[in-house]
Image (cartoon, rainbow, N blue to C red; front, side, top):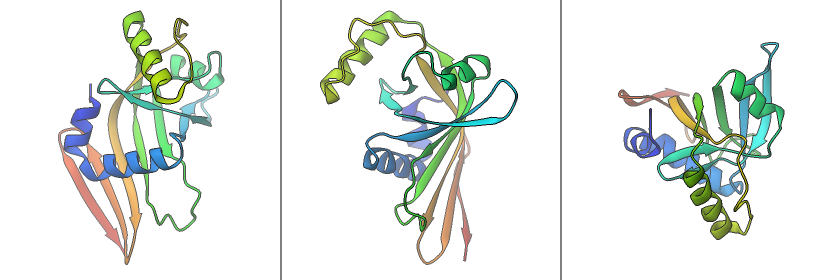
Length: 162
């Protein structure tokens, strides 16, 4: 499994763009999942980095989490509002696993409460999805288009387009 720390070490540019854009949008990202009929679904989500894990949790009973329970593959895209992408954007790809550990859930709920006052303390999580990243990319626009691509163990590579 690719931990967040490993991702940051192997993909410093992409993780930096992801973190910057994630924070700039109040933690909002768009989550791509696969519906039961095989078609794509795009849903808003607020992922968190917690204890070296990229955690994808949210409102229980939503279709996006039913999708992940059936097919764990996902794409997580930083929310972009600028058509010129002047601040860059990032996409993370992988698969989730469900971590059914009440102690971790409790620490996560406390950290979330400490961060923004949202209180999930004492509640049970239907799912607590941890992301295992399999690839990632970011786009930056300057004098040229720079696409940075990462795969575990391979580091980052940059494709430049004018």
